[in-house]
Image 1 (cartoon, one colour):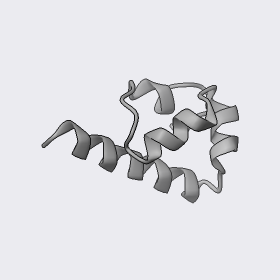
Image 2: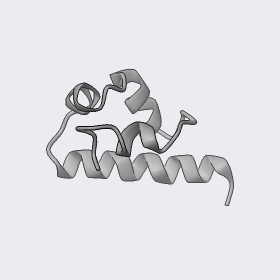
Image 3: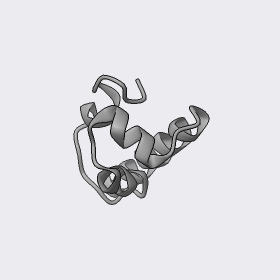
Image 4: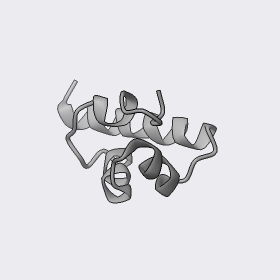
Amino acid sequence: MEQDDLLHKFGRRISILREQQGLTIDELAARSGVGAGEIALIEKGEADFQVTVVYARPGGLG
């Protein structure tokens, strides 16, 4: 599987989890310490990042 495919699938999963938890991108950004713009890029599959950025930070989706 290509890296771009993985980034898009992961980004979509982040978006789904965020929406299931009733969070806006801004709310997830505030909880995780990751900028809203970065989260938007992750959700679109346009940002390469460490998985720990969204999942492992206190208050994130994990």
